[in-house]
Amino acid sequence: MKRTIRVGIVQQACTNDLKLNLEKLHRNIASVAQAGAQLVVLQELHNTPYFCQTEDTNLFDLAEPIPGPSTGFYSEIAAAYHIVLVTSLFERRAAGLYHNTAVVFDTDGSIAGKYRKMHIPDDPAYYEKFYFTPGDLGFEPIQTSIGKLGVQVCWDQWYPEAARLMALQGAELLIYPTAIGYADSDTPDEQERQREAWTTVQRGHAVANGVPVITANRVGFEPDPSGQTKGISFWGSSMAVGPQGEMLWRAGRDEEESAVIDVDMSRCEQVRRWWPFLRDRRIDKYGDILKRFID
Figure 1 (cartoon, rainbow, N blue to C red):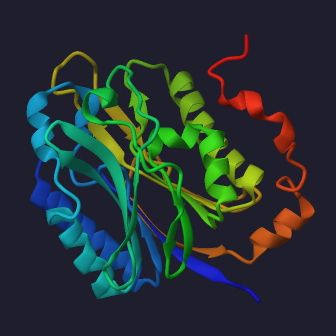
Figure 2 (cartoon, rainbow, N blue to C red):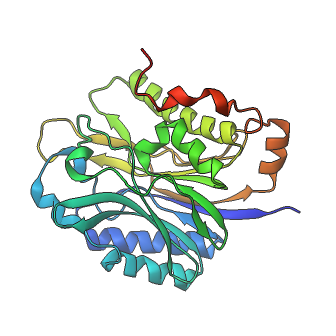
């Protein structure tokens, strides 16, 4: 029997006006929900600009508890439109302890589960280790009324081990709220290589695990408040990928976009029958994967 999930993806730019960002998010969520989306995915840290371009202790004031004001806001939206909603928030767990946390709401507005970002980058203009403690909830899929979701966040999307662990626990979709872009100092050729590498690795997760991948990225230029770099041009290119890595939909790199994509979940089992990668795994020979490096 064919089973389809209608997935809404929201790709938008952010400003320093929190109220304006939330109003636009609400409009965009409403738009895809009214177009029939059952599952709506937002980008990483969507309430604000990407604040990790600089290290500033005052920016910890952006964090909030879970549950808190933002979870209340998105809970009401999920319930009003009867959707499963994937959000990405700056969590204040305790004084001095903060996480980059995805929160998933079910169709009744309840919190179905959360995921704390596990892989934390520390690169020029991406100083996330200053702000975020690595996650401690593991790679655990979140059960919702429309299926089991393997939600991770941004930098996690480069790690095949993490995607595999989600799939091995029954995740039916891999979902990545994201904030990634070009350094304006890079050449156009280098910028395109980076964007295509990012696209390719996620398509590989879909193929290797026989599951669809959904990614929502932000878009637009955000300056570096410190002036030490030329800022980030977020490259958009949000996407929905099928279980053979086929591109079901891909947003542009420069414009705000929202879309609803029909994802045929019934194909996943057929693909796994054709390509039984899980059957043929040599689980007795992978012990060294737990080492940092084999030398």
